[in-house]
Amino acid sequence: MGCVVGNGFEVNASFTMVSAYELGFKRLVIDHSVVPFVVSDSSKACITLPVKICDCSDEFTLLTNVLTQEALTSLDEFVLSGKIVEVRE
Image 1 (cartoon, rainbow, N blue to C red):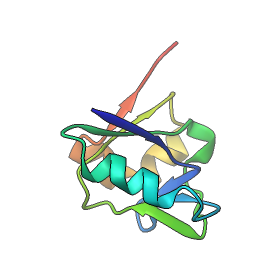
Image 2 (image 1 turned 135 degrees about the vertical axis):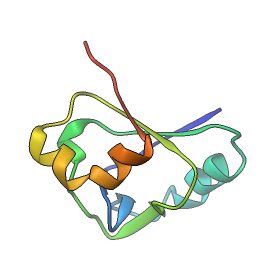
Image 3 (image 1 turned 120 degrees about the horizontal axis):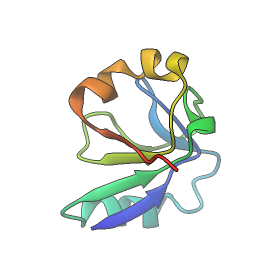
């Protein structure tokens, strides 16, 4: 199992971050994990930043807090594929 943090996520851009500084490490974790997780809170939904961490087609599960209805609607591809796990308080 491996976990990385994403600073933005949306269906077309997938998981993104501001700088490429940690990209190599994050890709290493994702590529070498049997069960990769991306952790990102719901405030990062529908945000696209310049550096892509992974694509929608990559194997991962998103762990996030409860998403708004607007975010759920725009992320329907992730929701329908079972790639999102909402953690409720």
